[in-house]
Amino acid sequence: MLKNIYYYHEENASVAVAQNILTKIFNTTKQLESFPESGQIEENLRKLKQEHRYLISGNYKIIYRIIESEIFITDIFDSHQDPSKMNK
Image 1: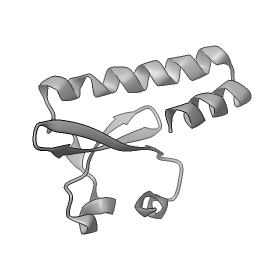
Image 2: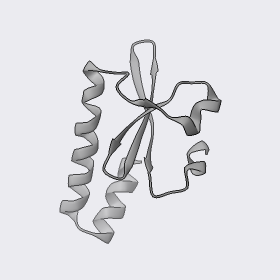
Image 3: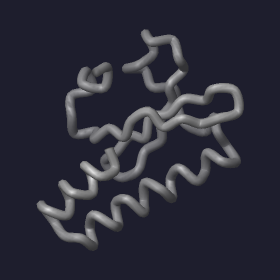
Image 4: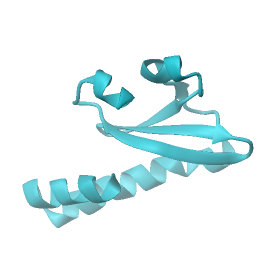
C-alpha cells in the first residue's frame, strides 16, 4: 500500500511530495505506541466485528486493529475513494 501511494505521488507530483506523504503517515502511526485506542472505530468495517479503528493522515485513513497487545495496520485507504471499496 505504501509503495503504491509513494509511486503514485512520485509519478503525478514529485519525489519530495511522495516522501512527505509517507513521512506524515509514519509520524501519525507513532501515537499508537502510547495510545493504541486513540483512533475512532471505522464504521464502514463494523460489520466485520473486528473493531477496526482508524487515524487520519492528510487524505489517508490508516486502518488498524488491536489483537492482544499488537497493532496491525490492515489498510491505508485514500479517503477520496468510495468507502464501499474499503470492504474489499
